[in-house]
Amino acid sequence: MKPLKKYGSLIVLSLLIIFSNWFISSQQRVEEYYSNGLYPYIALALRWTLGWIPFSVGDLLYCAVIVWLGLRSWKFLSHAWKRGFKQWRVDLPSLFILVLNALTILAWTWLVFHALWGFNYYRKGMPEQFGLSAENPSKEELSKFAGYLLRETNRFAVETKVASPESALFFNQAELLRLGETGHPSMESNRPASSKVADEANHPPNPQPPSFKSSLFGVLGNYMGYGGYYNPFTGEAQINTHMPSFMLPFIAVHEKAHQLGYAKESEANFIGYLSAIDSGDSSLKYAANLEMFIYANNALRRLDSLGARKNLQSLSPIAIRDIRQYRAFVKKYQGPIDAFTTWFYTKFLRLNNQPEGMYSYNKGMLYVMRYINKKPA
Image 1 (cartoon, one colour):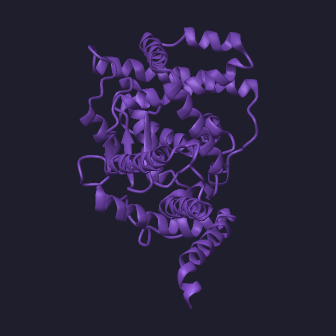
Image 2: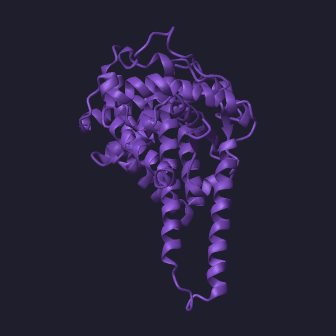
Image 3: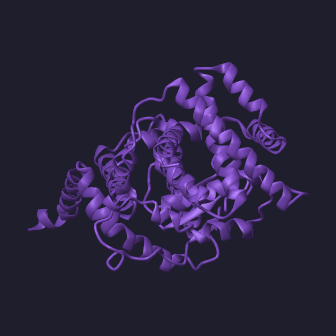
């Protein structure tokens, strides 16, 4: 009995990992039993538990982990220094236990991450849910779509300018968090009926409170190159409010899409855009259309550089100013921290069923294009 008791937790951990890998091997299974089954209740519980707290609990959790790892590393290196690195001999049994404990912690973290949110990475994709073609776009498709986004961007930039002549798009923190809290009902209504396994009577409502918060890391987020992120351990959506103001509305709905269970970056961009164009907020519509225009025009430039250049020249003065502001912002904060973060996040995306890495964001543009082309006029 003693060996069983001693290694019982490792046996349970191994069985859970085997079960999890079997579970995610079927998109239909994940969609039915997790994304549209268990996950909405998990999100509801997390938001009611932590959403009312005015600051980011998840950021504090990350800080605590960083401090703990730093202290453990310092203790290990101090011990090695005192004994002398040259005379220090590796204690193989102790080293084995250390490695085993580290792997156990990583395995449990992987399980908790997936149980609370990460299984959504393996749900049905947008092409299956919305009946969209996943083929690579032609030059004609990209040119037509970029032109559409150009017109929409200019249209809502003008509306925004009329509404606020002194500042075309100024979002203070309170306004941004309000935007995120609304959630925009279209995020739920745009989900196809085929992706739901229960009617509204059995499907939990949009969880409240929203648990939508400003990142505690502040300007550090600029150097790390992120605009927002979702914390699956606490259910909180964080926004880097130190980004250029015109970008914040779309970042907000992107993170809201993550909260609703759309884990892949391409899915969050797609669902966020659908929410934006169905909202009554012209600033949000402007931000979403400009975001998608940049993706589409960059893709077009690889096939038709002249056409892409003409599109940029046809943008409204407001959009041109905002793009210049963004380029200056990126240049200001580019450096080794941003490069490392990009490398690390690319690896993270690929490990979580997104082989395109950072190009997953671009894939959302393809979904939007195919959805708009398919949508009746």
